Image (tube, rainbow, N blue to C red; front, top):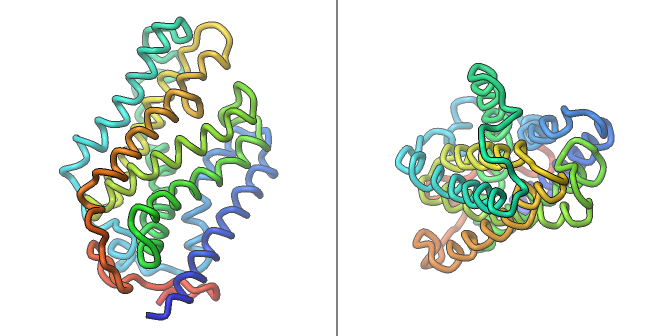
Amino acid sequence: MNQRPMVGGIAAYLALVAGGSVAVALAFSHSAAAPALSAIVPVAVLLTLTPIPGRSAGRDLALARSGLRLWSVAALAVPAAVAALAYGIGILFGVVVPGPASQVGWLPGLVISVGFGMVLVLSEEVGWRGFLLPRLQTITSPRTAALVTGLAHGLVHVPLILLTTTYNSPGSRWVVAPLTVVTITAAGVFYAWLLDSSGSIWPPAIAHSAAQIGLLLVAVNPAGPAPAAQLVGQGWVLPAVSMSAVAVLLLVRARVWHPPVEVSGTDARIGPLPVLDPSGSLR
């Protein structure tokens, strides 16, 4: 198979998502809407490049299968364990106050927030794990593709961190930025494993949403200086270390990636991959 159209499509997607993320950060540098707008950039890029037919989108982007068996096990258990570890250590060292999250609000507000957050997370996962990951797997190994996809996903958060005041704001930008990239890269390996194990985008989307909610519960119950409390929240040391340990374990031991999958333009989960070339046609 001629891989040039596939490589060109991958490059076009990455360039446009990166450009869109920078544009959002510059245009909404002091707006709370910046993180949400940045989250929908991957899907917006796909829809801008090519109109994806509704019927085939479910298959092409791994939306058609539920992956139900992993929803309530790894997809929820790993993010819950990372958040619980951060919460417990935060309480132990006095940087988190035990108790209900002070900024979550009443149940209706929580349900709305979770639902809205799931839409944003799904928008990200459709672009990174639904579209990019399987295409990278046609030109490199599944493990390398998982790392590269996670790294690219992490790097597009850097404009939000460095250019806005509304995303992971406490602490030094030069500490928060690399730790956020490490955390999202490692989490991306976990999400890739969920996708490759289930053949569905839903388990990684559920896990991504659970991770954000779990770390939010830590971040909104600080005690003492905000940077100290953020040590155990999103974008700081403990989540980066915990998720990196999970990622290393999966990269070394995950059965779905051993032995290396033989690919020739076909993905075993979702069938032949349409090629998104730089001109914007999906074929």
